Image 1 (cartoon, rainbow, N blue to C red):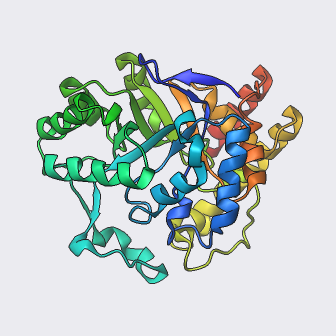
Image 2: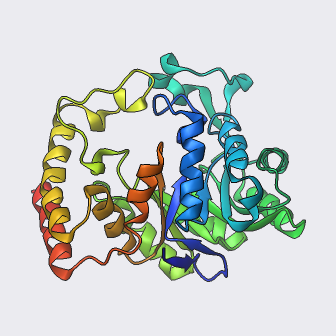
Length: 326
């Protein structure tokens, strides 16, 4: 395993992180809790030290199960959790039928009152005295950034948060927040099938000394190479409703993945390892978080940490992606 620091901080994390969204429920189909906990244990054994969750993942369930899985090894890792998403009316009984319009039931709240209360609740669920990295989950246009960052600063000064970051902010929103209180990290989607972050976010993070956390590194599993045009997703899996997994967009992505598979074979890697390793080769990326339902998924993911892609592989990947835009 390789380790890197977030921006100009002294917080060091494994380059492959463990994403904990899946165990929250109602998004990714059935996830067996016992097997998921076994996956966390395998991650620890293989040197993963960065675990990413959020209070909105299962309305605290992800944090609770992560705490159970880590047990007395919790102090050996860096935990990032997030704040800022709430359900309208406090509803928490979401299921498969709600997935198509789930965003209609979600509100953003980065007010001081909510942040302070949410941090205390996350600490209780995580069974910790301090949150290592507290991320603003989504920007909240209704709350002044000074109020939001003031609350985060309060938590740091009180010793309840070590470092502050943001998630899903634009480069401009990130800079505005960073002017109020220095951000250690910014989390954003980034993969071979979504390179939007290269346009502004990655250069902005590098210039400001902010570490980059890539999520959806495997583009919701598509870059694992295990799907075909005949693959189907249950109604309890939001990919069932995702346009990226339907019609022409899905067909084009599968064609790209087929080309990338050949590069992976020549590099002695699985398609997933190639995708993760590519992200880790990009300037400004500190860590790539990847979910796992089973221990063998963790083993595959960790295999990307030591991979050094050849210049030929990087050139071929670039050609494949350029051709796909033509």
